[in-house]
Image 1 (cartoon, one colour):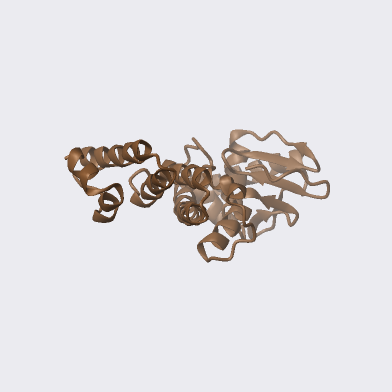
Image 2 (cartoon, one colour; image 1 turned 90 degrees about the vertical axis):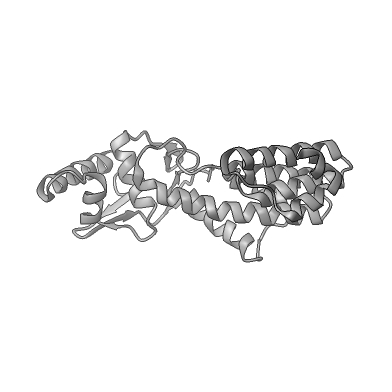
Length: 242
């Protein structure tokens, strides 16, 4: 998710992958530097040196991990000065003027979930389809990725429902599709998508959504769609699918 370059600071993108801009220029980072920056960025208040050492080099003894951290911090400082990371004797944090796209995205997603969005056009929320650190193999990001997925799924569901209620069926379908890409086993976005097709008079489209979801549940979980979803499609359609 592009946050834009800042002439008096920097921006760090974590969605869908890592990119760093400082004073309007992209800064190349090695994989090791990325790992360090990611670990710090995912914690809003930074991390203690000890926590960073354990997270990045869990198999090393304390002295060896501390040496590795000092070396990595020196490399980051060589490339970015004090514009990206601030390291004290106790902790490491992002520099004050560095924005992180994930943090901004989480704030906006919570606005939707809490019912206080600042933007009224659902099309402005398609950034919720962005995955956090796509393909990044480090286990330390899994928890943050799961947290972001849960939050954006709730926001996408809410926005899709609002678009459907407003009669904007194409946007409802697109937002619901994004939600399905986050969690294909969640029934809500499938049901919203089918309802949007029905609102457009496209029974075949709604039927395809229902049957794909039904087949997925049967194959992977041995379950059936809810009674509410079956009722939405209609008794006849549900009977034909048995």
